[in-house]
Amino acid sequence: MKTMKIKIALFVLAALIFTSCKKKDDTDNTPVTGKIAISFEHFINDQPAVVNDYSYTNAAGNVYSFFLVRYFISDVELYKSDGTTLKIDDWTDHFYVDTDIPHTLLWNVYDEISSGYFDSLSFRFGFSDAKNQSFMFVNQPESNMVWPEELGGGYHYLQLEGKWIDPNGIKIGYAFHLGRGQHYDGSGNPIPPFIDNSFRVSLPNSAFSVKAGETTNIVLRMNIENWFEEPHIYDHNQWGGDIMQQQPAMLLAKENGWNVFSFHLNNN
Amino acid sequence: MNTKTLRPEIGLVLVFLLLFSACKKKEEDDIETHNPTPYTLEIPHGFPTNVNIPEDNPLTVEGIKLGRYLFYDERMSGKADQGMGMSCSTCHQQAYAFDNPAGQGTGTTGLKTKNTVLPHINLAWNPGTFGWNGSVASIEEDVLLVIPDPTEFASTWPDVIAAISAEPMYPPMFEAAFGSKEITPERIAKAIAQFMRTMVSQDSKFDRVLRSEDNFTESERRGLVLFTTEEGADCFHCHGAPGNPLMTTHLFYNNAKDTIFDTSSDRYSVTNNPRDIGAYKATTLRNIELTGPYMHDGRFQTLDEVINFYSEGLLYSEYAHQLMHKVYPPYGQGAMLNPQEKADLKAFLLTLTDTVFVNNPDLSNPFQK
Image (tube, rainbow over all chains, first blue to last red; front, side, top):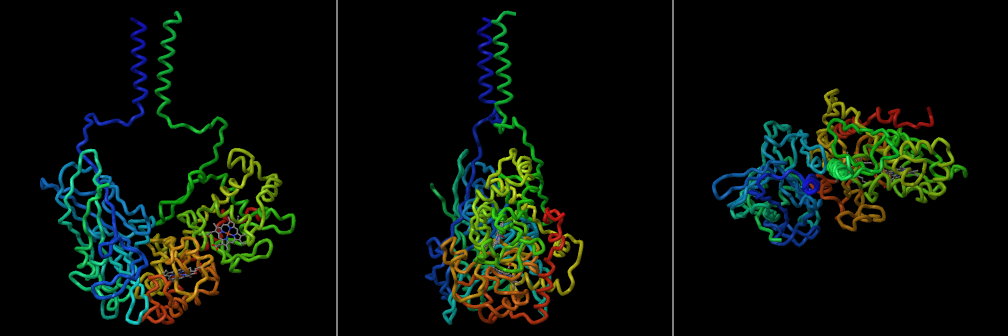
């Protein structure tokens, strides 16, 4: 019947209206990938770090407080149980964390992650020399992390700040800043090449799984006291408030950094 | 054709029309067309690409023009008829990068502002923390606050609107900028804010060197090195660097000037966070030669005094920001600069003066043509 046919045509068109605004779907709707989201936590002695609290004592015996930490991680690699390695690099290959800016404490990773089991992950703390290019960040807060050209350029990998109480009972600020290091000539002028102080952090106990169509929540926890403890005991009284031009101190930080992070799964 | 066959056809046409319109975003009722000319803020070399322009107040040529007139118009105090005419430009003067050499501002009734006047330099990049303590969220909000403030216009909005409405030039300008002749506090605030977002300073010697159009002198270069190194004067952590060319982090610090603190207008008065006691915004050092007296209370008259302070005048308190680590031994009371180093640091600071900005005709008083 004619009217019947028209009715069907109308129905089809109406159905079209309801679907036409949707984004084009993949032909096969079953996803084979999931997502990961990385939360960043900052702990001291197994408790969330409390700001402006002088109840902490480091391995050298310095009583200290914590005010803030800012840092970059880059080149995250996920190691799949089948032996393949996934690099996080689709939208960005790095992330900026700042305890004063809440939204920087969660990285919703853009990459589609193929579902399955992962044995572990690793990342670079800071930027490799090849990636640590001056002027690559024009926007704040990242550009506030600029590392002076004179000292090698690029960006701070780390700004960890607080105060410690010196032997005279004075509260002295520490700016535990890590970035490119320098050699100096006899009259105190830096001589290139500068030193890459970034390092890879491998988290052996970091198994997780990614389910198709779901987001796995991973926690990277910085255990702040570890910056000062292993293998080198770091004494604020020895190194003072600022270390950007003290490569021996930055080397200790670099070498202590290996176990500063721990991996956790977030089940909510 | 009979009606029976016609109707389904009409139905089909309608359905097709629906198909084509259903996906369009809902458009604002643009029936009465109001199309002000969009104005594109150019991002200077090396500047942040993120600008803080509210979605409901895009820059337009007509809005900026109106804002410029209002910024310079003494009728804005709503008290010109009482001999108390005052404009934003009374306190914020272009020759001083929109700061004021008097230090504090003096309002229509003779009362002085609590703190010194702040310049208007690259405020389009301010993340939403205006004022010495960051308590004001936008330029628009600042305008709304100036009118009743007893130390500024000490006026009322009805008086201001009446004074502005009485000037025949304005209703058509409001219409051009906002689509109707109506004059409201919000529209005044929006127009002034648009104008102020065009106050871009990007042509100092410092900028020209970064654009490879000029070179620093040896002294200026040594000054930059002092500015950006911890073992030097270490200013850059708070006041920027070539890679952070706004020359401010837009953050708040206690820069170790005092041992006791008036917490009535500091950052602590906004956040209640003890870390912010005695903390103020590390203002941009662009045009710093022109914006004295210095600090929120104007305690230093000259740049030499400021440099001497950072060199040997720091005071210890437990509230001094952790980056002021030179308060302590082995540095003594600051960076301990020798006379040559002080001269070098000053030479660098002077490269931040932008004479093109303070003479920019687009930012000047439109009533003095």
